[in-house]
Amino acid sequence: MNKEESYHAFEILYWCGIRLGELLALTAEDFDFEKKTLRINKSYQHIKGKDVITTPKTSKSNRVLTLPDFLAEEMQDYIFRLPWYIVIDPSNWSSTIYFSFLSTFNNRG
Image (cartoon, rainbow, N blue to C red; front, side):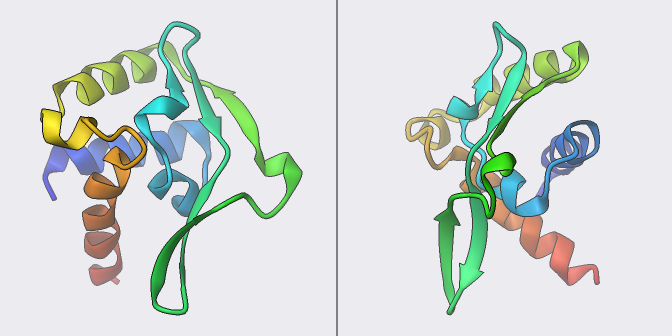
């Protein structure tokens, strides 16, 4: 995992206050760069040895967050620079990137 991926992951966690599972379930479609919002409507979990995307635990966990201007710009730039083979399936782009982040995060203790 490169430093840029880690940087953006931590920025989203910090500035948006989302849970790690919510971060890992994000897709490009969850970002609305015109409105500068981020939709949280799913979560990543590891259940019985399988990676699963689930709905949030409570209805209040479904929410739309306003992104700070600088973060919306940074994420738009980052997503649009991703290689086409990652972005071609917008429902899976973050998984490809952030599963390696999760491994790195867990290996650090």
